Length: 416
Ligand SMILES: C[S@@+](CC[C@H](N)C(=O)[O-])C[C@H]1O[C@@H](n2cnc3c(N)ncnc32)[C@H](O)[C@@H]1O
Image (cartoon, rainbow, N blue to C red):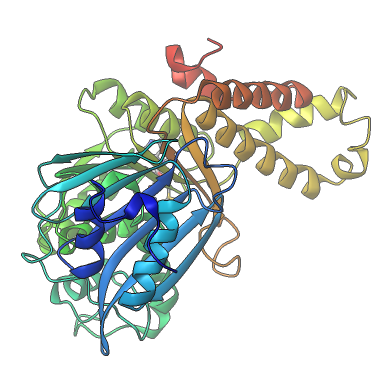
């Protein structure tokens, strides 16, 4: 496929196109379709990065549509074609990071490009080596890196000798998959990224994420929050031994942490925080202005109890079509899990986030394998927010539930 009108020589997008196709002097290219193009472009986000393979340089392209991500590795010629197709698909935003400057471009409905530059938010590609592609395992964290091995030893994932422990292989896979799922977030596209791990436990996932980010050239600060003082002491020790300097620990509940915090957050993660601690984490992310939230909920007791009351009272919908479900305790409990997470997802959408609900790891590793991944929309979409709020209200009213989340969000919750 040849180059089309908007990419013709002389067009002001041309220098960016040349940079992306004739060099590897960039680290990340992100294309998001404009609203008018969203209906016919089959992806919501297109992310590309140069990688080094044994046979030479290639470009890894990840396209995301809803909860589905598709990854391909392209040779330079096919990359040039794929890029033209993506840029020609319709109005879109293009960001290119990691060169001497960051480029930001917008393609208008009329096919014109509005181009601007800013100072680089990532180290230039020439300064930091290209992300080497671990072809054997497609891993984000390179297991031959000394820093990764040191951290994994501290976390107990590797033996003290630095060799992998066979009984921890599943956990290592989880860590890799977690980093893989989070590496495409827009939140990384800036000088310094502040991450909060809410209900961090031993923080093996967020410490690994912080190390991946550091190894990829980003400056990361990690705030690890847990109500257990013993746990945060362990995190502080692991971080210090693994040479992760910008890790702060907080022996507080998530709610206490957020009420004492003023600094904005870029990314909030919360994994398997119990019951409504996930809601505390969600509210913390929203209140601290997080650009992205990644939640892997744990047990769901709150709404299960409320739904049981609805069922006992014989109120709709329990007495209608759902009777076949709610008469079995186990099924009712699982339904409560689904309603809880659907309400969390709808709440985040109502608050301006684009949300995907994906599987974190295989259900064989843990039954609690659902991940809610939310990214703040660059531009507000009031209609999407209103629709999400209506969905939230309809579902909550149908089951007669009042999630703690609404109170935790305080004035930020549109209905409060
Ligand atoms: C099941 S562990 C998960 C730990 C870690 N995130 C992981 O995935 O390995 C849950 C952690 O959340 C902490 N926690 C529970 N409720 C909390 C709250 N309201 N505020 C802060 N931490 C909380 C507990 O102390 C515990 O360490």
